[in-house]
Amino acid sequence: MQQSQPSNLGAIFRSAAGLGVDAVLVSPESADPLYRRSIRVSMGTVFAVPWARIGGADGRGRLAWPAELDRLRGEGFTVAALELSEEAIPVDAPELRGHDRLAMVLGAEGPGVTPATLAACDLHVAIPMSAGVASLNVAAASAVAFWELRSRD
Image: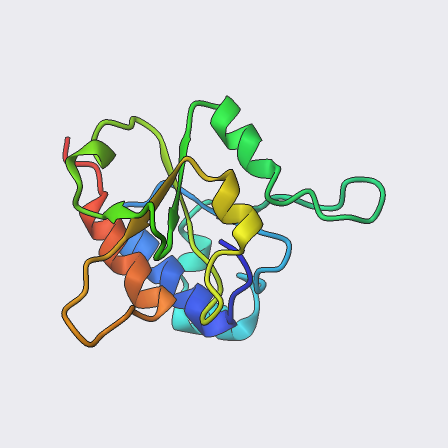
């Protein structure tokens, strides 16, 4: 999760809890999940879903994000950005079902996933929209993606 507003982050946590997401990882620029507004919008689910902040400073004062995505990949995750791009596949594409461990990257409201982060992702995923609507709010988009990509065991 890249830079976010506390209310969007809270809504993302609420969807994550309700739709069975294993954990939420927040980038250095992300809002604080323990900020009062995040907690309130999440209906307290920030205390129910495991989360961690990843990608801190690299020792020289620079952020180690998005290089942190390599660590996820090393742990067996496929990293997919929820972002409109030329390479994006639909969120309901069958090829997304073949990954045992999938990490979804969500961008900030408005600018979306940064170009550097997008380049570091294995896949780009988009939610097909009806004519005249370009995209959803990041919190709403997360709920759609979490639902579509949930475990169906």
